[in-house]
Amino acid sequence: MSKKYEFWFVVGSQFLYGPEVLETVAARAAEMAEKLSAVLPYPIVYKVTAKTNAEITSVVKEANYDDKCAGIITWCHTFSPSKMWINGLNLLQKPYCHLATQYNREIPNDEIDMDFMNLNQAAHGDREHGFIGARLRLPRKIIAGYWQDESVQKRLGDWMKVAVGVAFSRELKVMRFGDNMREVAVTEGDKVEVQTKLGWQVNTWPVGKLVDTMNAVTDAEIDALMEVYRAVYDFATDDIETVRYQAREEIAMKKMMDAEGCMAFSNTFQDLYGMKQLPGLASQHLMAQGYGYGGEGDWKVSAMTAIMKAMGEGGNGASAFMEDYTYHLVEGQEYSLGAHMLEVCPSVAADRPRIEVHPLGIGDREDPARLVFEGKAGPAIVVSLIDMGGRLRLICQDIEAVKPILPMPNLPVARVMWKAMPDLTTGVECWITAGGAHHTVLSYDVTAEQMRDWARIMDIEFVHITKDTTPEKLEHELFLNDLAWKLK
Image 1 (cartoon, one colour):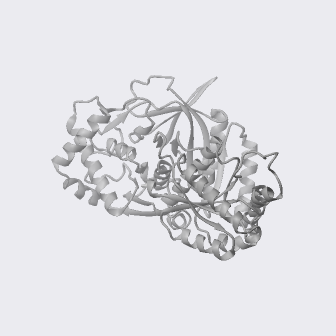
Image 2 (image 1 turned 60 degrees about the vertical axis):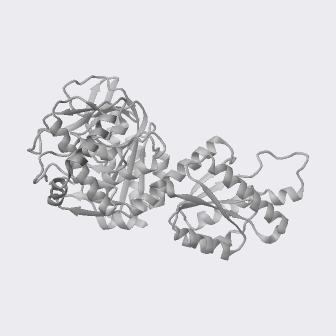
Image 3 (image 1 turned 60 degrees about the horizontal axis):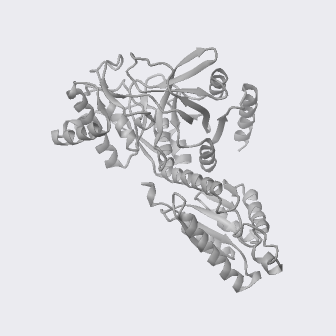
């Protein structure tokens, strides 16, 4: 879905330096766009060397209404008086990156003269351009460095993925199969505020409609999906009928979501009327295809899972619905065990997942099939979006996932084990202080910097728990945030 996107390159200059300079700027801008497009995850389209208020306003209006344009990237090859950017930037509705670079890497000792200085004064122009961004209080990403350096290209590519996440968010529809789990606070939230801020359309479809759709699924459709299961998963059960029932559920949920254009869904074990099993394998395999999921009716984490999967496209696909379940509190070996009763995405699996059938213990239904596996090791983040009443807060914690230190042979669920930053107990204190939910999105692909950029564009609060966070620092930060957001 996200492959349709492109980014527009708008280069600032002015008429002061004459037509020859402007021709050189345009040629270089086109060259830069072409070379960057060859190494970045999405193409850059050179649009204009902007020299007037009218040109800037025109290209911004065009960008706002072009669905392919996921954001604009600006750069000032020469000095570009910033007053002429005001009208256009005030209208801008797309993500905005200011690339502070220059065409040449080095100062040419023998060639540099005043003509060279007039043409190659990005150090001058980008500061003028930067001022107006600050003056207008625009949410923007500033990336400084030489445009052909790998580090600069990596940061620009990461920002592009954030912008795609923004576009994905603004089009996102979430299908709720029934309501959320009774009496749970954190899965509640203001759907009107969420649609206003983030674009999500969150609505409910009755479980009875899902059951009707399940009953209409054919054996041939189930046979085809079973072949897909056999291709990607190991069967560790002889109970094929139970697996086929999960396939029936998956096909029906996918049909309903696709018919409505939904890329995320939620359900709850408390609302399974007419169903024989709580979807386990069905939900897991849908997540592997890019759909977001939230257990117990948690539509916020469902949407965030889908968004982070879209942002991580082109990586290893590893973003998953997750839940903190239990701790290992042996001194010097403190770990969190993340899992869920059924629904963890196989994109985070270290090895080929296996399909197993076991009792569930809740939901009062038949034993469901599910994928069982251990998670990958490596640096990752866990993210929680919560409704603070009057504003949304996005909490992000750095973690280091490890191979589980115990085999846990009697635990028939997917599981990921990690060290929380700055350490387990301090991290838990900070997470609880910030109000983080027990449901999260765990991602190996998306970074904390990307989530900060996403939150900035969406105009919501961002809280980051790192190796350097202390409860005292966090309490002070949250206090100041409260004041700032109330004033805002």
